[in-house]
Amino acid sequence: MTSPQQVSVSPKKGHTAGSAAALLMASALCSGLLGLVRIAYINDLWGPGVEQDAYRAAFQLPEMLAYFLAGSAASISLVTLLNRYREKGDEKGGHEALSVILSSMMAVLIAGVLLAEIFAPLYVRIFIKGFVVGSPRFVMCVTLTRILLPVQLFFFFGSMMSAHLQVRKIFIYQAFVPLIYNAGIILGALLLHTRLHIYSLAVGAVAGVVLGATLLNTLGALRTGLRFRPQINFRHPIFNEWLLLSLPLLLGVSLVKADEWILTYFASAGVGNLTIIKTAKDLFNAPFNIIGPAAGAASLPFFASLFQQERLEDFSRSVSRSVSRLFAVGMLVSACMIALAPWLMDLFRRGAFHRSDAKETSFLFSIFAITLAIWAVQGIYARAFYAAANTLTPALTGILATVVSIPLYWLLFKLHGLTGLAIASDLAMLVQTAALAILLHGKRLVSLSHLEYPELARALIAAIVSFIAAYALVHKLPSVTTHFGDLLMLSAGSAAWLVTAAIVLVATGSKLPRQILRRG
Image (tube, rainbow, N blue to C red; front, side, top):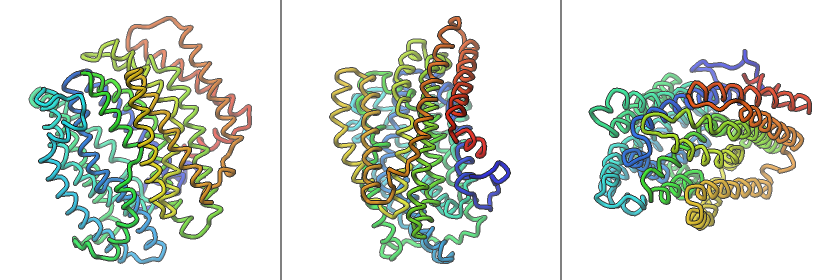
C-alpha cells in the first residue's frame, strides 16, 4: 500500500495500484458530487415526465452501438495487448498496434453511427416499449438519439488514448474525464435550456465528451510520446489478434449494461416511471462509481502484468485481496445509504420533482443499495479474466445471466411494478457475480480460499451495527421539512454511522481502517 506522500499526480509519472485506485476514487467522488448537482438541476427543470423520459431513453441506442462495436471491450483488450509490448520494451510496436486498431475501428464505428442515424425511429419503436409512435416522447427521443449518436466516435477515440495511458500507469487525465462530462451537461442546461429546452442536455453531453474523453486523453497520450499514424488495415496481424481477443466482449452482453436496457424497456410503459427508476439508479451509481469502476480500471494493468510475468499465486492473491477490501467497503457504504435514503432523496425535492417522486425514488434506491458490494466486485472478477487474456468466459457468463434473468425481470415487474424491477436487478447481479467467482476458482486462476474471510466478517458486523446506530439516531430526532433540515439529518446520521463503524472495525481487529488511511 502507498502512503499519502507516494500518491503521484504527475501526468508523466506512473502510479502504483494503490495510488491509481486512490486517484480514480477521488475523481469518482468529485464526479459523483457533480453528478448529484446535475440530477438535481435536471429534475428541478423537468421532473419525471415526457421530456426527461425521452432524454434518458435517448442514450440507449448510442451506448448500445458503442458497446457492441467498440466501447469498453476495445480499451480493455487493447490494455492487455499494449501491456505486452510495454513489457518487452517495444514502444514502436505498441504505437503501431494502437494506430491500426484505432483507425480501423473508427471506420467501422462511423459506418455504424450512420446506419443508427437512419434506423433510430425503428429502434425506439421496438426497444423503448412505452413510447408510442408519433407521441411527444417518441419524437423527442428520436431527435435526442440522433444528436447523441456521434458522441460515440469521440468517446471511442478517447478510450483508445486512455488505454495507452493506462499501460503506462498514468491515470491523471482519466480522472478529469467524468468531471468535464458532468460539467458539460450542467452548463448546457444552465446556458441553453430556455432556447433549446431538453435538447440543451444533449448539446452539453456532446461538448463534455469532446473536451474531456477525446481532447484531454489525446493531449495526455501525445505528451508521453505517442506516435499515432492513421492506417486502416483489417488484415494486419495485430488487428486480427485484437479482434479475436475482443470479439467475445463485442458480441457478448454484460449484465451491467443489459440491466440498463431491460429497466428502460419495462419502465418506459408509464410516463415518468423511467425517470424515477433511472434517478434511483443514478444515485446508486454515485457511490458505486467511487468504489467499483474506479478500482476496476486501476487494477487491470496490474493484474495483467502479474499474469504475464507468470506470477500466478500473486495474481490470485492480488485479485482476492482487491475483492475482499472492495466488498468490505461496499457493505459499509450500503449500510449508510439505506439508513439515510429518505433524507438524501428529499434533497432532490424541488421544482418539478415533488415529494411523492422523492419518496418513490428513495424506496427504489434502498433496494438497489443492498447489492452495492456485489456490483462493485463483479468488475474485479471480470477484469481478472481480461488480465488472463480470457474474454470468452465472462462474455458467455454475461449472456447466460442476461437470458436467464429476463423472465425474472418480466415476472417481478408484472407483480410489483418498479419495485419488482429493482429486486430483479439485484438478484440478476448476484447470480452473475457468483458465477464469475466460481468459474475463476474452477479454472485455478483465482482461488476462493484466498478471500479474506475474517476481514469480511468484521466488515459485516460493522455494517450491521453502524446501520442500526444511524437508523436509530435519525428516527429519534425531530422530523424535518426543509432541505437544511435534511442536511442536518444526513450529517448526524453519517457521523453516527462513521464513528460506530470505525469503533467496531478497530475493536474487532480489522485492518481496513489502516488501509483506507494509507490510501488517503
